[in-house]
Image (cartoon, rainbow, N blue to C red; front, side, top):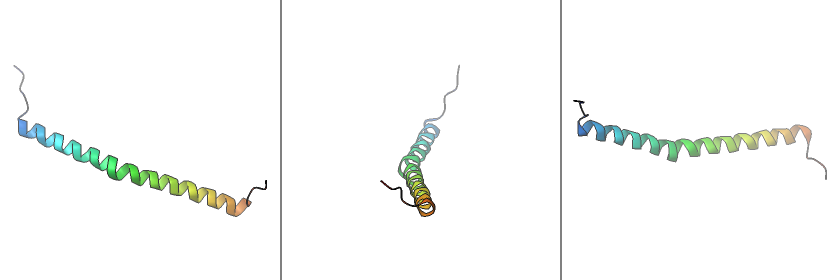
Length: 56
C-alpha cells in the first residue's frame, strides 16, 4: 500500500504555503508595483528634463 504523510507535516506545509502566498500578495506585489510606477515616473521626468515639454 502507499504511505501517507503524517497530518502534522501536511499542516505545516500548508501553513508555510499560506505564509508564502501572504508575503507575495501583501508585500511583494505592492512593492513591485510601487517600484515600477516610480521608475516609470523617473523615466518620464528625465525625458522631459532633456527634451523639454512637447508643444501643442
